[in-house]
Length: 283
Length: 315
Image 1 (cartoon, each protein chain N blue to C red):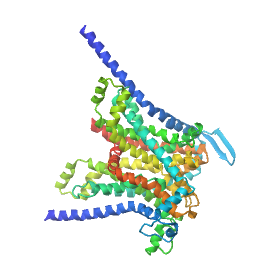
Image 2 (cartoon, chains in turn purple, orange):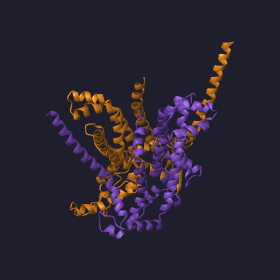
Image 3 (cartoon, one colour):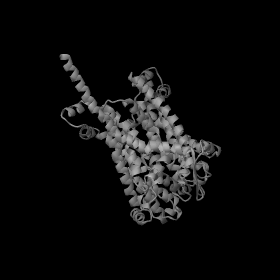
Image 4 (spheres, each protein chain N blue to C red):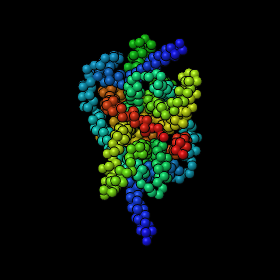
């Protein structure tokens, strides 16, 4: 009798849980649905109000956007270069740093490890002033170097890599390679890196996305239109007298910056959602 | 004789190991070279600049003159920084409180074996999605959706809820709520996944024992799950607070950098951004140093909370 009551209570709870989950899912997806609909409609149709079915203007909007004054294609290419190279070097050198701490014994090793963890929390914003002065002094404004090279020192990626190494990289393998006469650099590139591939893939995605979305520093260092990345162009769109704009184009531009990431995310979500936990929880 | 041979062998081995260990330092070079150039030097330069009067007044450059701690005092006297700190905190709390409550609830459901929820991967994928969206594009999207003639207003009018468009961006609390809501949307999935990992780490025998003793699932949640989650909750709260202090992209794009209406949604980093743009290095530096100190104190707490239990577990 009691058991029956309990199972029916569980059933009610389950229904409530599903309803709430569906509501939150809608809350997450609704905005992108509206964005998609509006990107497919013409300016004239948009001013008449919202409809729930897509229009046939997506291609026209895209064409107008590409022909317009904002260099969006160039912006996307710039974003792609910056984010792609950042992701590559960030994961490569973070793995190297983690390997240094994991595989070797040297003086101050623990001090260095603690130090890297301690600087993890320093926000880029508090050093931005000095960073800008440095970039100015090095004459690297309107250059991608200040946006790419700093990602080599990424404590968060390092932390993920060293945790992964501790669970999957046996020292015996490295010793065996040494006996075979392999150099340390060769060992790193040809034995360690291939073994670290799953971790590198996960962190490369995160590094790519965070660089792709980065707005604060690029908005301060990039001034030339042809060098701007997508977030900077979006800000420019916002500060322009946007009411006079073709709204179909405005939505197409936003869709252009958001949907590529969504598509990649949906393809790789299995690894990404797993990576959040592994990287975010310490211990 | 045998002993010397052994000694040389030991020495040889030690020599070989230390020869390899040199590579530990070599592999650390890229990290530290980049760290020193792009983080440490800028940090020192930022602190150094905070002691100087250095700005443009019209077309004339004032300074740089050494003024000691004057910039730090001036920031506090002007009251602006306090207003912006207040705005930042208000919007952070408005986003964080629902975020932690919803995340706890969803996390508890996902990890509850009795519920056996199906489609977990789908739901996790969906609620994590907004975290990866470009914040500036997301803010621009909300700006167009909630504008006076935008789709939200037209939907509300079509549904008969409103007679005429509601001007979201002329209302202090509507603007703040939108910013907090966007922060909530972007972070609750992430927090849910973090809390779930914490919940799954709890020894299931505790739950079974409680169930045998006749505890309800509410009791189990408040008496067992929540106390055991305390370290991870503190971790989530303080890292979120550090992130909240850095709030910039969303309010900057949504209000076009003005923090309107009446600077009620101006955050500390938007204020810093203003100084960086106008090249007011003295005040910008002092503001950065304040932010650095607050962040450092908060990070220290995170460090203590997350490092200690782990070390205890090991020994």
